[in-house]
Image 1 (cartoon, protein in one colour):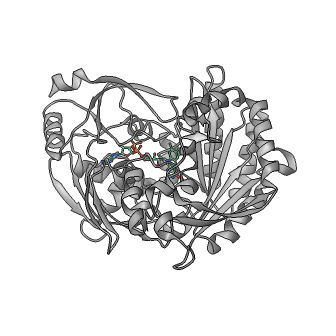
Image 2: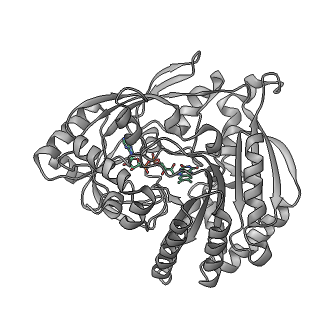
Image 3: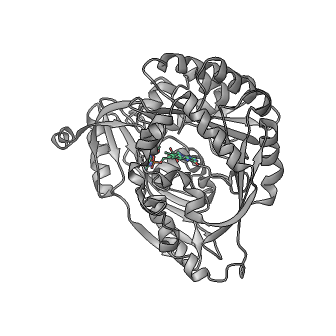
Length: 469
Ligand SMILES: Cc1cc2nc3c(=O)[nH]c(=O)nc-3n(C[C@H](O)[C@H](O)[C@H](O)COP(=O)(O)OP(=O)(O)OC[C@H]3O[C@@H](n4cnc5c(N)ncnc54)[C@H](O)[C@@H]3O)c2cc1C
């Protein structure tokens, strides 16, 4: 086993390419191989981090100097029932595989991330939310059952009722309690491969938040683009996109639009430019004046309200349109900072943070807002309010100043009663986590960790950073 691991030493990084961690990567193709690795770890002092597609923005799937258990080859859809919409799949199945399997039969995953390249195991490990969080909750709320291997060697089956404490803590448990080996998920019925989409501009942060709040009940999805370079009375301006499912009979040709070929994102832009090279053209604009110019042009273009029909894949996976777009941020990569704030405090807190980023000369180049609701999972990030995700370019010169500013952001968010999402921020400190999760939650998590993993085998750079172990 050890020889096998040493052969696979690789430098892994996070999605934003801002962190690097050399690790011994092991890619099992069966649950027996996972069992064997866990058995070896119980005998020796091996730390293991679970990894799906490695699309977390931070160090959640990194384990500097340790073993990374890459589950992407456990990628079979085990059962699919087009009558009930129930699917059972291995953890390495990606959202792309999933929607491509179920859409032709008239179903769609109930919750998806902004990229289709994430795996089910990774989506469960973080308990992802979509642009419909305020209505559909997190992905974990649609899981009817899961099986997992615990580091003790035990195999468990969990449903919301059977082993309910494990169910609600392993989902969103950062891969620290056990390895999901299969996940059963309820899909959502669709009558078309299209969504009715409406787009309109918002002039300020207060308009942006009001649009999310007031619009949410009327739509199945709602999301805001926020121009984080705009200042003064335009601070927080942007554009809202809201979308609704089509009802039965609304689509004249559902058999066509539900086909995978109809949904597939084109490989070229304007029919000629291969999308794989677009990130090279982005690079010259990834600086303060360049982003200001691009955002201003985008905002002006958004002033024309529009309604149109768009495929599910195009609406949900906009970021996948430009492969490797994150490389446009340059060699030091990017950090995403996402905060979740109650609806009562969001406006003031984000006004303070955006203003601070301008004063520091460190504006975010991309801002995205969403509407949320609380959920019943132990390490939940959700609130009855909103989230704002901000992407920041990392440079050698500004790395320390940026980290310092993000710690100031943390204080603002905590003061405002906010929370954080462990798939995104790279700076969260133990005291920050204790503040928003509370002593009781941290103690419960630690007790579960002791029960499932008494030898503390599952450890990641994120876990060490936030839980200081
Ligand atoms: C472009 C982009 C857009 C995104 N949009 C959204 C969004 O809209 N909403 C959202 O919520 N998130 C979003 N994310 C974040 C992303 O969905 C999460 O980070 C997700 O966890 C990544 O899945 P992954 O397969 O890459 O998992 P990884 O990043 O590899 O791992 C994530 C976590 O899951 C654990 N894990 C992996 N496999 C297993 C397993 N089999 N058993 C137990 N634990 C496991 C890992 O240890 C780790 O803690 C986005 C990310 C990107 C890059």
